[in-house]
Image (cartoon, rainbow, N blue to C red; front, side, top):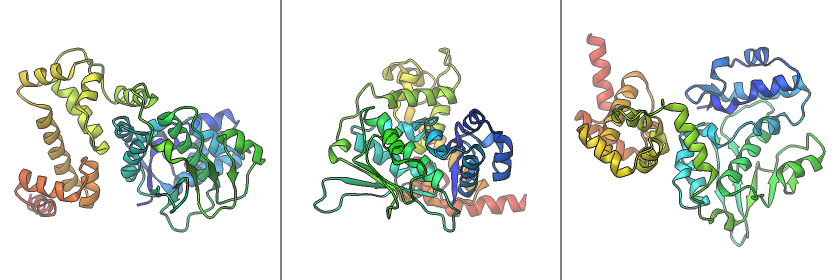
Length: 339
């Protein structure tokens, strides 16, 4: 599926305007609805993203447009995936959490990680699983720049890769790339990505990491202010939005509601429910909706519901509906046809 979240264009209108051009016709020509820009709830076509970014670079005359756009983006563009990074014990585990669920942000992006035998570095590659894309040098630079910025958020502002690798020739003088990334940049390489030190992936995630702030900003953006009344509603809303992160952290949700975890537990008990029951209930509702309204494959549905394996979703469907997911989907469709 060659799609990507609308947050991939976060900051696009502002940057185009700053550079003296009008973003509206560029977005329209690229087939991107203005309301999709910056929205985590709306997907745009990956080809549309490429068209918008590459045409903006031409319209503004900014040969470094992709890297400039990355300066207006951060880990928050991944939405709930930032929460997965927030709960990781090490920087490497944080990256793995985001890597594992990247398809929820864009099924078109693949992030292979490998350490060649005997090598003193780890290689992180950026690949786009879309055939026949037009030239997309700006999008490649945007993606790598945004990834390095995310690493600095997770690891610390002092992080620099060993080297960065681009599959195209330099678009501006090489010295500008080195100032931007803080490391040697290789051009016309056989892969897009960068090399990092193994130790950089083994650092403990700091308790005061800026990732925590990103997650709190995201949580604040999706929930109204909690005024101390009924807690079931706000918890359900947070659970629904955080399901794709996989690791539903009760303590994090309690902290966002300014409650101690045990206090949250007691408040839910008064309202005759538990955190586990709410998670299960929301998962069931979302599964019912996906099965009724979409043809989404079961494997992708499992990820959106926060399950690590499709088999877990299959067992849950049998418990909820007395049938497999595909079986319940057929029953729902048959019922709708009779009605």
